[in-house]
Image (cartoon, rainbow, N blue to C red; front, side):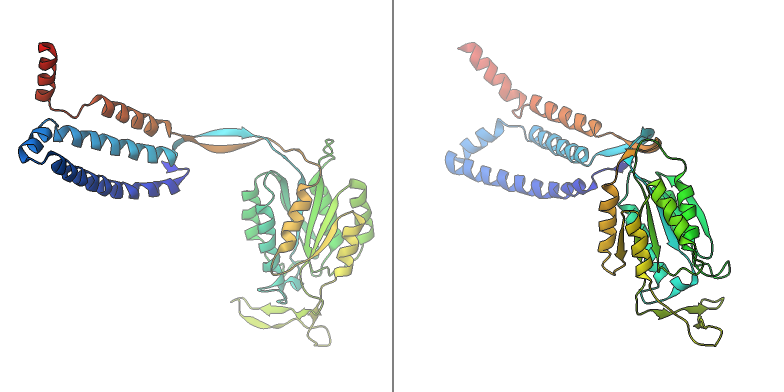
Length: 348
C-alpha cells in the first residue's frame, strides 16, 4: 500500500492535541455547571442523568471518524493496472559529443560530465515527446532509437562515456547523418523534428556541408549547445586507475589546447532556423531549449502502457461516515433517566 498525498498524514499528530482541548473544555463545563447549580446535590442530580460510558464511546467514534477522514485525504492506493496512454509531442534526437576533447575541464567537472548533466535536465522537461540518443566522436552511433520512455533513455545516458580508444577525432557530419536516420521516414503528420547537439564544435573530419543540406531538406531544426570556452583548456589523460597521467600532446610534444568553436555551431543552427546556445553553469539555456521544442508542431506520440495505482480512499471515507452515523444514533443519557422521562410524559 502507498499514499498518493502522504503530507496529509501529518494531520494524525493533531488528534492528541484535539483530545487535550476537549478534555479542557469538559473540565470548564463541569466548573460552569457547579457554579450554576450551587448546591452539590443539584450537581449530582444533573450529572447522574448522563452516562459517562456513552459519552466516552461517542468521543471514540468521533476520533475514529476523524482518523478515517485523514487517511482518505492521504489517498491510500493498492493494486495496479496497466493504462494505455497517448500524448502529443515532437521527435527529438539528442546528440552528445564523446570525443577526447570533451574531457577538458574548462567547464566543471569536465565538458562531458557537464553535457551529460545538461542532457538529463533537458529530458526531464520533455515529457510527452519521443527522444533518441546519439553519441559521436570519430564516428557516430545510435545509442537509443526514438522512444516516449524517458527513463530508458536516462539509463542509457548514464552508461555512455568518453571514447578514448576508438576512432580518434570528431566528426560532426557523421553525427548529423546518424541523427537524420534516427528520425526514420517522414511521419506525414507535420510533427516537429529537432536535433539538440551538445559538443565543443571541434570537427576534424569535415564534410559538414552535405549533412547540413540534408537537415534542411528533412525540415529538422537544430539547436546546438556549445560546451566549453573559447579560452580553451588542455585535454587530461588518465591511467587505468583513473589517476591523472598527463595531458595530450601533439607531434612536437606540445600540450594540446582544445577550444570551443562557436562559429561552426552557430552557422549549423542558423541554417535550419534553429538557435545556438552557450553552455553556462546556471543552465538557463536548457529551459530556453525546452520552451523552443515545446513550441514546435505537436503530433500524436505512439501509444504506451503506464502502471497506474488504484485509489482506495473510498474505503476509509465510507468507514468515517458510518462511524459518524453511529455516533449520532447513540444518546448520552442513562437508560434509567430515559425511562423516567418517558413515564413522566405518560403521566401527563
